[in-house]
Structure formats: C-alpha cells, structure tokens
Amino acid sequence: MIKLQNVTKRYRNSIAVDDISLSLDENKIFCLLGCNGAGKTTLMKMIAGQINSDSGNIEVNGKFVNAAKMPCDVSFINNRAKQFNTKLKNLVNMAGDLDERFDKEFAFRMIKRFHLNKDKKFNQLSFGMQTMVNTLLSFASNRSIVLLDEPLLGLDAVMRNTFYNLLRDSFEIKPRIIIISTHLIDEMTRSAEELIIVDQGKLLLRSTINDVDEKAFSVSGTTKSIVPTLDNLNVLSSKTIGGHTTAYIFDDRYKIPSGTSVNPIGLQEFFINLVGGDYDEE
Amino acid sequence: MMKNKGSWAAAKINFKQLLPAYIVTACFILVGVYNIIACLMRLSDNFYVDMANYLYILAVMAPIMIVSRNFKKIMFLDGNKRAFYLGALINYGIIAAAVSLICIIFLVVTKAIFGSVLIIQSLVDVFGWWNHGIAIAFIQQFVFLLLVEVFIHTLTSMQTRWYGWLIDAILVVILCTFIPITELRNLLISFFNMIIFNSNIVMQIASCLVLSAGLYLIYLPILRRKEI
Image 1 (cartoon, each protein chain N blue to C red):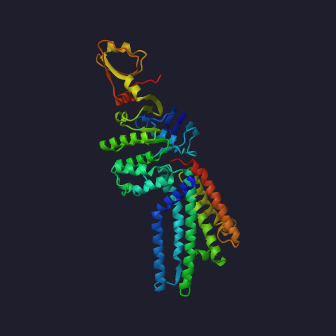
Image 2 (cartoon, helix red, strand yellow):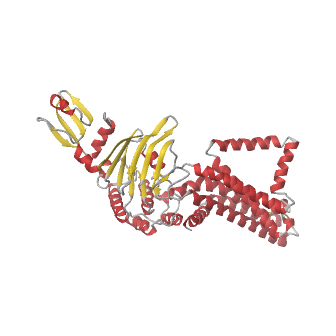
Image 3 (tube, rainbow over the protein chains, first blue to last red):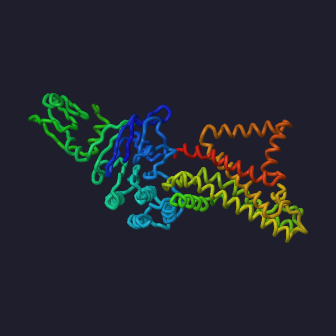
C-alpha cells in the first residue's frame, strides 16, 4: 500500500510536487501521466525513498519512507540508470546476490524473450535495450511495489509489444502495485487499470481507464446549441471557430441536444485536453 | 541472514568493480619491478623502495571509487544502504589485511634475497613497525590502512554536500597553519605519532581502531541522508 499525504517537493525555486495526497492500496497497474517536468519521476523517487520530500508524509506498507528509511518493498530503477558496465548475466547475478527475493530465473527468461545477449556488456546495448534491462531487473525483483519510469523510452513497436506481454505475465505471476509513467498514453490502456494524471506538480486526476472511456467525449455543433448545455459540466476545453464549437467533456451527465454530434475521445486526446485545456478540478 | 548476505554481495560487487584502481596500482607495481631490476643491474643506485608499498595506492583509490561510483550503481540494482555500509567495511577490512600481509611477505622475502646488496625501504620499516616483529607489524599496518580507507571513504562521501567542502577547507587550513607554527606543528606531530609512530603498540592500534570506528559512524548519518 502506498499513501501520500500532502507531499511537496521543491527544487530551488520550482515546485516539482505540490501538495499531493494519494492512496494506492490495490494490486493494480497504474499509469502515471504528465507532461515533461510534471513531477512524475520526483514522485516515484520519493515513494522509493531515493529523495526526501520537503513536507508531507509518504507511507509504504504502513512504514514511513524517506532517504534514511528506504522501503525494501519498492523496486525503482530509473530507466536512464547507467548500470555497471558488465555482462548482463553478471548484472542479473549481482541483483540476485543483493536481494534473495530477486528471481534470477525469471530475469534470464526475459533476457531470452527480448532477444538480449546475456554475454553483452551493458554499455554495448542500445538505449532501448538498456531501458529494457532496467525494466526487467525491476520486474524480477519480486517486490510488492514496482515503479517504472518511462520504460517504453527508446523501444520500437515490437519491443513495446513484448513489454506489454511481459507486464501482463509478470502481473499474473505476482499481482502487485505497478506504477508506470509513460508518454505513450493510448498504448498503456491495453494494460493499465487506473490513471493518475499530474500536471505542474499537482494531482490533476485519478480515474479508472473504464471511467475515462465512459465519461470522456467531445461534442461539436453550433455555438448556440452547444454552449448553454455545458453549464455545470466538467468541460476540459472548448474551441470555437466562427459559429462552430467543439467541447471536450469529462462527465456522464451530458444530455445530447439535437443538432450536435458526440464522439468518444481517446486517452491521448483526453490527456491533452485535460492538461492543455482550461480544466478546473472543482 | 538475508541482510548479511546483501552486505557480502555488496562487498563482492565492489571488489569486482575496482578495475581502474587495480590498473593504476599495477602500473605503480611495474615501476617497482623496474626499480628492482635497475638496482640489481646497477643502472641506478642500490636504494630500493619495496614494490609492495605501491599497494597503498589501492587502499587510497578503493574508497574513492566505492563511494563515488559503486554506491549509486549498487542502488540502481535495488541494493540497500545497510548492505552497502557493511559491505564497504568488509572491503576495507579485506584490502587492509591483504595489503598489509603482502607488504610484510614482500619485505621478508626481499630482505632475505636482496638484503645484502640493496638498501630496501619499506613503510613498515619507516614507520617503525618492523621493530615490533612480523605479527605486530602486520596488525599495526592493517589498522593504519583501515583508518586511511575509512577516512577517505567518509571524506569522499561528504564531497557532494557543503560540509564536505568545509571539511576540505578546514583540513587545508590546518595543514597550512599548523606546519609553520611550532606549537601547532607539535600538535600535528603528536597526532601522527599517535596513529603511526607510536612506541606504545597497543596505543597505536587502539587509536587507529577508535578513529576508524568514529569516522565510519560519522558516515552513517551522511549515508542515511544521501539522496540518489
């Protein structure tokens, strides 16, 4: 279980994480979304105890977490992490020696599945492959919470597909809390169950993928017919060109007026309108 | 048991990941080999610095690399700080023991073979430990090396924080001001007498061990606060 209470983190003059409160207590795959610099990595690092928060409390499985008390239940390997420049098989053995819970067999199976050469040194791998190695080390850690920071960075379509399979397999073998930050939003809907969206350090939205599917849509028609129907609704953004208006809505109370067209919107479009639009959490 | 296993694993990883330190040490040892050949072939005077003394370089470089490079990478493998803390201590203990033992063995062998033709200089001799017998010399050198390693380890770990720079400045100021002023210089001399040239063997060993323990304890809160 992860519990954040009013967590704030500042870097000099900028606020990376701004008063976030959040509780994750079910074994699920969570998708953490946010623009660059939204505070995703900072949030993950704080949950892993790699950095301290400036204020607020973080609990993992009932224990307070900070840099002095790094939780042993969390695996967080930054995907840009430069590992020891040694053969992959040595890296797996090192990780296995450091923690008895580490599943070497699973790691070697994944190395084979991703067509990685276990005799290749870490620095000899492409960026995408290095990312994959970091990801599979996390999965093999067998810890109850796995945090993956942009694990799809640098992966081609085939490798991404293999990653999603790995994610599903790993979750089936050991259900746990997996938080994945990514920019490939639509693809993540295949695996993730819940969405956590942060923007400028603030928690913007937490919702299930199904909820987004059901409540998020766009409506377009003449401004006269659209605008009056939007009152009291959760409007993410709206655009008016001439006399024609398109509004992006996240609400299930909308009554479709005649002469308007309603279209479902994908997760990516939803995210863009939520973060880039005039969304008001209230 | 699991936690101890992690410490040994961290120590094992550290030993495997000290290649630059091994290479630099090996280069200096090669200089030592050249030195003994040159002495024997009368290419230079017959003053020979025991090549095993160059192993001190390993004892100096190892903590720098362990702290500045290996720590982060062990954390990247989901290692924990406790394992690293104890693991590094295992490294320093083993390195100090190995270097001390090799220095003693080399000195014994070199003196036996070349003692009559060369003037052999070794730090064990210079520091006066040799006069106390082989076993005691080994222990005295071991505790001194341990202190050196722990001191460098703790000092290196501070370098990313403001107080590290402050300590550096204080050390420089101490050296610069203590040496020219007789009273202060005497203070400095008595400190080095205590940890190196102490005629009281027990005192020398105890002071090195106490200082090592103190310095490594100082490192504990630094490590706990360390962010990755």
